[in-house]
Image (cartoon, rainbow, N blue to C red):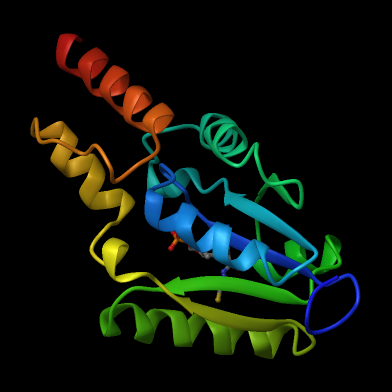
Length: 169
Ligand code: PNS
């Protein structure tokens, strides 16, 4: 049972293109205070993701296999509607630096306006992960840098394969 109410369900949304150890740290910490944590993978083809939504969701499933209260789902459209359909009362988002704050605040306020009954909670990224982002991880590996320790091993392997395939095509 969660600390705040009985059967507390939270959605942790994101592009997860791909999941990093920063995301994973946030998942581990938020799974401790909710009953169910639903990872909502945004489809969003407009962002031209490196991995398809199914590939991203599969990688997530693989890395959260050890958590019995964490599940993975994909969504399209408004986040708050996805959260409401899953009976979630919380949206979890991570904040790394002050630069994340402005965008996150805007989203949280818009989401509150759309669905006041759903609360956004922010978790501070741990210091070890405060510089890690999916975007930078992809850039570093594309340019031949070492990303071990920044993403789960299964993701590192998938990234290497994807960039190797690109380099050879
Ligand atoms: O990992 P990201 O890319 O920072 O996640 C962004 C995400 C998925 C949280 C955001 O783009 C989102 O919620 N998109 C769904 C569309 C939506 O609800 N838009 C209005 C939000 S104010």
